[in-house]
Image (tube, rainbow, N blue to C red):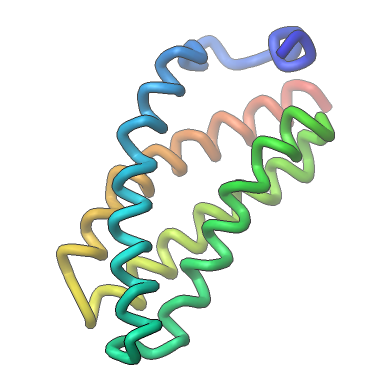
Length: 128
């Protein structure tokens, strides 16, 4: 964390403890929503195509921390979080015809990742 703490960041950067609380709320939403989708896909009740953005999103989400803090690669982390953001929207669109509730349940995730993407873009720009 010394590396991250040494970076220039915008004044509106939330403290790490707040970010932790946000993810504590969002991860169960992701688990429930994407879990439901994958369950329905594996049962054959939803087409496999619906799982594509879900799987890409999960992989990109889990890759962010090792890229950002392990590799300490801001441009790659920025590209990764953009993939996360785009695949949330894509997921919501493809889930909508099968469950509006499940699609809308991803709204807090979308709101946070949109904010986190703006933050990541700012940090990357400030530390170029």
